[in-house]
Image (cartoon, rainbow, N blue to C red):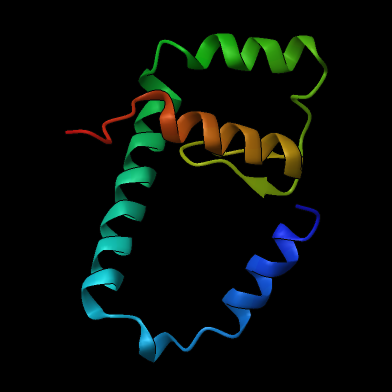
Length: 97
């Protein structure tokens, strides 16, 4: 279990996009759009967002950075942006509907 990232990166970099079935590509596009929409709405409407932002501020992790957070106009440090994008993407989780 020490080479998961390397294995995934090697797979992704050698993938022939022409070998992916069109239905799989369309499904991936729909799921990506769903994630982006959920995250953008969660940034301004989810009840969990203010406590997450307050926790980041309390921990001193709310400083400026160069990375984008979905639905936010400012930048964050890479690890904070990754955390926020993950949290926001699942705050209003409609995976089953």
